Length: 184
Image (cartoon, rainbow, N blue to C red; front, side, top):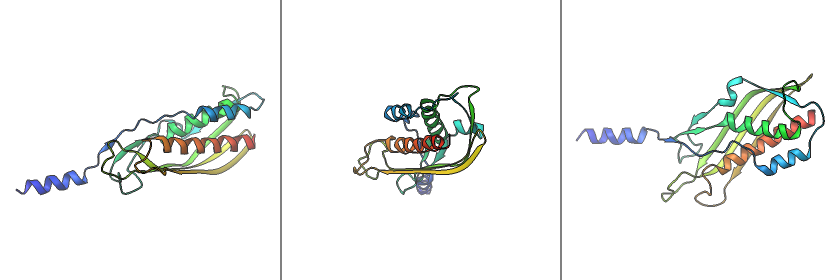
């Protein structure tokens, strides 16, 4: 009889692992817009610091009550770096020997909340945010900037498992590429 309460307590405190099907590519419409702002020149050679940021997977719980104890794998590093690189490639062209651009990550954080409801079979994200702060060095110019994006799904129950986080990462990547474009 004593085992039952202990098992119940362990089950409540044990976090479940959640693996979601994230896309790490920026939307095609945004790539098309970046191509429209194409800069002439010898292209960019992008270097990310720390070098392992491109592979950083955050294992974290949701920011809200629902899923707060989950261990969700959030690919913050790949999501941001691949999107930014793709937009910079469309706008400048990325190539070895191009103008050096160093992006030193100061802070990169993704937040999300799962949709509440007992009828949700799979977890849907209905609120998402991203804060990305970096120090940039482009040739002889150096600057620091913070980029933020937030989205909320007005639909009760959420409409996508990963869509909102992907949209905020797209928004942050667009802000970064436009910032580099303004300093180029």
